[in-house]
Length: 196
Image (cartoon, rainbow, N blue to C red; front, side):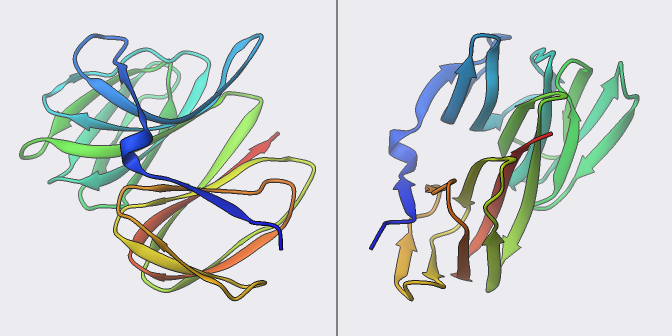
């Protein structure tokens, strides 16, 4: 039977310095082509107030993983703000906008999904507890995966095999086939990247 997934523990994530020199990112996956970054998924800590790095050309989705939250203020293509208060809260914004982070009460951790603007779209769905997750196969599908915020487990709906996932690990799912799973325990984030 063909394996439908691959689990990458957090210890295997690649450490990358921030473009602004103020911290580092744990890079989970990065895909490039001749034009540069096509999409990237990473985990980072924000330890102080300040401006985010400029990622012009990339659309960003940020998911709060831990901490007391923060406010993101945007200036540029879009002017406004998002307030993230609890784990799994989500903000979507353009990487080229001037983005300022104001922490509510201490450092936070977040998950970042960045995709090339006008080429890709990231469908990001929080999972809290037992939940059926279906990834359909389509010509537009580019990448499918799940980040486990907590230690969790899921049941493959086809093979009926149960798989345990360590906290902080990333589950990459086979893109060329439909995948249906029942996430049975723990909080997680489902990511489906598609071409426009």
